[in-house]
Structures are given as C-alpha cells and as structure tokens.
Image (cartoon, rainbow, N blue to C red; front, side, top):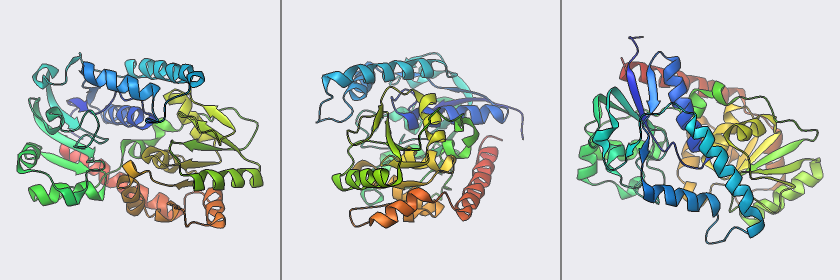
Length: 356
C-alpha cells in the first residue's frame, strides 16, 4: 500500500439514524486502519439541522409522536449528538461553501444516499457531486442514488459533475445503471462500510435473560406485525423495538444510542426490519433476518439482497407463516458469507487503487 494520505470523507454523518452514523464511522475507521489520515468533512447547515431535529422527534409523520414518547426520542437524539461529536472531523464549514472545507490529498464521497435527488433535505446538494472541493482526487465509495430510480435518469449537468471523479464505486445495481447510462463509465459495486469493516460493529451483546428478536424500523404493514406477534408468542421470543416505538413489540428501546443499537443486534436471536441497515447489520453479525422493504427503500434493499444472494429473506403479504418462521430460525448461509468475503476483497482492491 502506498504511504498514507490526508483523506476527507463526505457523507451524511450527522443524521439521527443508526445506519448513517455507523457507515460514516466504519468508513473513517476503515481508512485509518489502512494507514490514511482520514476525517469526516463537517459540513453544516441550519436548515438541515432543523430538519434533522424535526425528523428525530417526529420520525413517523404524518403520525405525530405521542407526548409520553417525546422524552425517549430526545434522549436518543442527545446520545447521537455525543457519539457524532466523538468522531474524527474537520473544522465545521457551511455545506454551501465547499471551498471552506480545506485541502486534501483525496476526498471520498459516500457511503449512503449522497446522490439521491429525492432526499428530503440533502437532495441535489452540489458538494456531494464534488463542487468546490479542494483535493488531488475525488473518489466515491459505495455511493447511492437511493430511491431515485434508474428509469428516471440524471441530467447532463449532474452527469458532468460525476466526470470530476477519478474513481467511482456504488453500493447497488440501480446506482450502477445511473452512472453507466449517464457517463459511460462502469462503476464496480462495493460493500456498504458496515459490511466492509464489520469488525467495528460487532460489540458485546446487550445483557438479556430472554431470547429476543430485534425489530428495527417503523411503518410496518399490519400483516407483518400480526405475523411477527404470532411467531414470537409461539416460539417464546420477546420482540424488542429499537430506535422507534412499535406498539406490537414487547419492549421499546427507543432511547438506544448507536453503540447500544449495535449491542442489541449482537444479542438478538433474529432481526425483523424494513430498513436497509437493519439487513446490513443482521448480515454483518450473521443473524437470521427477514425484511419487508418500505416504499422509500424499495430499490436499495432488493438490490442488496440480489447482490448477496439473500432475496429469499424479503417478504410480503403473500409470505406464509412457515416461511417467516424458517427465515427467523435460519442463520446466514455459508454461501452468503462467502459472497460477502468476495465483495470485501473487491472493495479492498477498489480502495487501494483509488487511493494509491
């Protein structure tokens, strides 16, 4: 490996979201472990801060958070603020003034939905396409267009901005099609940092005297909540909801901070989720899991499942109770672990070449 470089990581590191926090932390720590002087670019915007605060306290809008739950979401938000503040970061600068970010040997854009034009407050922000950044090279690692579908395409203006990148990688097939169709480049698919640098998220399990399945997400369809409830009652599992309240769960761990979340995953018998990083954390920890992708995540979760050969773990209203029980009782298959290992090698090779 070439001598270490000064590397800035540009991503959504301040989102009050377990996946956003951990992908940012894992990428920075992974780059540091490879000998680079890596830090997060601490972009700031008052409008974004307000939007994040509203979303943190009212995550299920238009359904409003009951008053008796607000305190739990406040505590969770404070834990995130403390955890984020402890990450290696640059000096703060306005997100609309990227030239104030400072100079770097390389800036790595990603992971997360950094190119999602439909993101409610970051969508179409020029800095994530390299505008104004001072670096010898721009690299994208596991970047995603989120729920902006390949069939919608991107304009020549935005495609031109991608031309500034010396190396581009994406984390899903949808994003690969968008880059290829707009630029003619063929970006490799690499692993989300949580899977690529999974050692960071394998914490000591949360202490528990009962077997439990972790429920991660909100807005679950009624058919799933009923099926999960029957499965739990039949098998003697407690349902523990983390980060968001779900009234059909036995226990609400809304206040969990990022490390508490990872510890709860580590101690769970299985994971029930409709979030992308619920699937990723289950895979990183070798846990049985089942997912019913929400509409917002209807592209990236199926893409992840197809890439790693786990499409059988995606369920819908036609899935039977026996299938659901089988998924939650069956750990990740050896061939899936082998496939993850193959993608780790590819992802390592991409980072070595892009930052050499």
